[in-house]
Length: 255
Image (tube, rainbow, N blue to C red):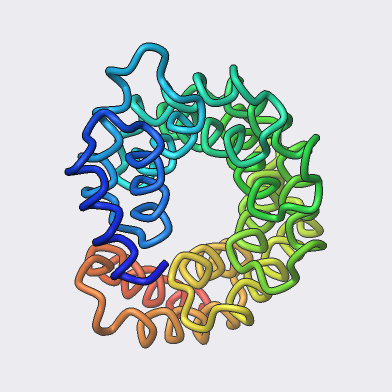
């Protein structure tokens, strides 16, 4: 929506502050413009209405999610899905909010409802996979991540998720390594890096796996990680560890 339209809608709300239709139109325009704090200010007043306009719950769930106000996002998400239980977006936003608060079972249920309405939604499958993995349902999580990559081959995070599941499955209860799972994990991490060059977390995890396998490929991966994170201050702690792991692997390979 053009900025002039937002200005006109603001004038309409100022002229008639009790006109819910005008306020909803402005809220929708601000959401479309990704003006989250303005949308919060405009939409909050709608929560004092009796009854609250049903569509406001869904819009405010989006706003609160963007502002990372997860408890508020979940509350509005619950209200939105109560009014529209088959609304895929409302269910997805609720799942995201619940997952952020560690309510993984409820999050999985919300994502299931979203996917029932819109099965070919890669992002919903991916985030459902994260919740399943948090509940240690590794096989189900892998299925979710793989479904996301089927729907969107370039989904780097979903490939990364596959790699994480395989890496977890590679460590057997007796402490031995399952090399098939390790190979699957490194392959998935490579795909993640292919679709997002310099993907720091994928390179770091891949370096760790090659270190476990005592493979000289790990030296190349650690170098790739260190180059990719050279100007990322937030990676400094991991960079120091990576340098230590690289030296340790080099020492082991020389023996």
